[in-house]
Image 1: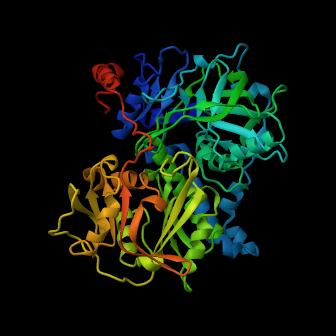
Image 2: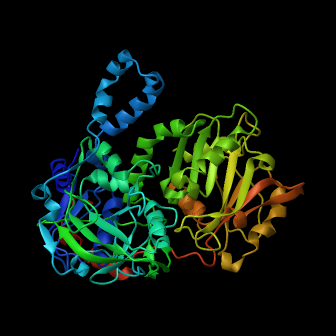
Image 3: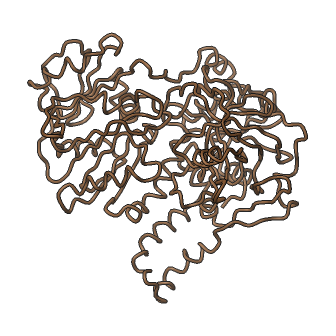
Length: 590
């Protein structure tokens, strides 16, 4: 599709999907505030021609609408995946008539792969920096309390020190100085696995940080691919052509020939430095923790290199549109990889890992539980905190309909399972320790068990400031801050057994009921603010070795001590951008 970033930018120009900003803009807070306003208004991509302190222009919001994602990748990959999955059974065993019928997409796969090119055809090698100085790059500081500037579209390439298998992942990179960065390798991601093996062997891990290149490269680094599917091969599939790389005599890795930058170095074993804070895609700050360091020895870049960046924060940001596309692309494969799982969706508004839902087969008693554990054992889905399952055919992206469907069939005595002491996403601080938390599985199967209430009339609860339904069967209770009433959820339980509350199968304590009434606000506020093992309340009894829950179920989804703060723009930057808005040339666009 697009061999490099600038080819994609030219397409955006033709489609009136990019604005070039000539005014000088500061990469410290100002640029990010402009970006956030434009993406909130569903505005264009932004090419900042003059960035304070750097000779390189910055491009952001490349994927900030579904249309631009489609312009980046085109319809072919989705069509190919759908046709391949639908033809799977007829292709085994292969028959000439079937192969002929499916020849178009089968032949397109023959273009997939990697190729080496002559260095003179590798634009990334046009400039080799003799003296490395990363501070010359226009790296953004997006939020006031960020620990420094962060590379936000980093394509981090490593190879397994024993097998040579590669990983390309998007792991945030904090600039520490002229030739050193932090690298946020999480324990459950491919780059982290490679570093674990290198460290076990006492070796430094050669690492290359790419910026730019084909747009498909960025999506591949984000995609939740199975471990056996190489990201570079997936990039080639998305492009519809072979991915060009180039060998460089003094580098252990081939470089992406069409990248804007290739930053090469090593990550030494057993060295850690404080990394963070960073305002991340959960909409909160991830806190300061010790992470590996990346020592840079060489920087290559195009002569007229463009620095690509994004800004993350509360949904919906640019990563939302990338995630939605990747799920649409890969979702037809779930029934093939996980037999009995008919459809699956994770919710970008919750940071993806906090909530997943699936339609599963229930052909025998509790078959759905087998599918639940299969889902929780698959790749990055192992980080799922709350999993909702049903056997009813519906659109999983319509969360209100999903929740109503499940609640009408939900029997807490049998349909709620809480798993204690499990791994948790590094960016989710609702657990009591970093990377530690719990999971919950909620089932809504078979025929309806109850008529769901849709309105609440009468009834008061001590300490509750407001009561409103989110949907049929789910009641929102606006409560004082957790610090003022930490025992409120437990104290409320006896009163929820009486009218008019007893017929509501699910109730949720929230900080802001107005925000929680609309689906995006509900998903973000609720699922990023509770840990199942600590914050789900119900009347319980012990039967043999099983804890049995009796409804209603109450979730305390308030901010709690130890949770990091929300990301918020600072007033000084907001006022600056207000004053300069006409200077940016965006008045008629946003």
